[in-house]
Image (cartoon, rainbow, N blue to C red):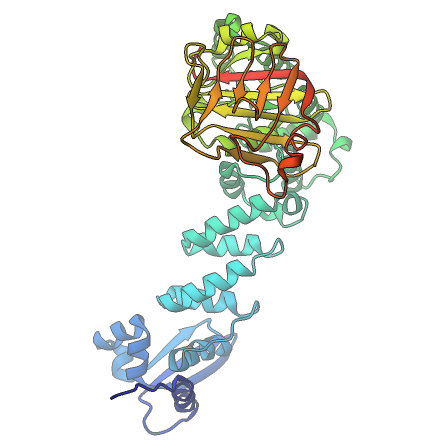
Length: 473
């Protein structure tokens, strides 16, 4: 019979006493200097070499420090070095917002991996708007990729508050560019443009009120942020959003007009005209900040830039997003189901956007698409979604309940039909029928008795706008 006992607390205390006692058994001195202040600590080579690869290499190399039994660290405070040495001896360290960066800098320089992990985690957990830029700078200078990514994601998650703070203006141009590349901002694209304008004004030391700037200063701001505007898909902006950007002096009148012309060209008949217009404008001397890689190339009239971003997250299919084209719109093609089938059947992946009389926005996606030759199809990747609903909940994606069941139905007298009863555009597609929970899941905390009310407030609702995007036309 045997039993193992451990007493790590006592062991840690004993080693702490060993560190604190200047006895005859210490065999190495560590000196630190900062601001004309010098401090020294008596240590033990055996402990230092076990706890630090830096000291292990130093002692094995038989360098001058090994021969003299001492080493000096410049620009290191007594408190920083003492905290690190106590960690070597006891495994314990007290980290505060005041000492975290100093300890991390030392740990990074002298390859103390255990401390680097501890400090990085502490700093990320305590990241705030007030210190995120400082953390980012340190992360970049020391090539801490994980912490750097965390900072950019934190900025994106809190971009509304961050971009309205003085700390946003501390970002350098390369950092702004990296932030824009993330494209997971929790504000809409118009607000991003407004934030960029504020950043540009700050860098140019202009007054914060943009409306009071004269034309010359607005032009300077525009030039300052022109490269960043190329990251923004202006072609996805609504006409109201474009007008605001134009009034700020950030785009020219002719660019606004060309975007409007391109957005107006939807449907199969206009595809060649759109391609020609885009090609001509891209070849012009100064195409400005129009991005033609828009995932909604015609400019959706149902979704603004922020809602487009939400829908892209739901889809999570970059290939489809790049390939899809507007195949049907109620504005151009009317509301008859026959027109829908004529333009959208056998076109592969299909996305349907619906706006109702009460400004609710919803729709669905099918990977297999519709086909009158096949009445019902399995489609486990299909889903419904709500972006604006009567409950005023956050946008939500509703997946299939049973992947083995048929969920996509094609009838000549119906428009897009998911689950037969779950969501259906009727023959006159100016009316939508809703009965969630049969083939597609219900939202959390919504009972079956209320399933018809979640999307549009009742089992039927008048439709005012439809846009249908297909993989191929």
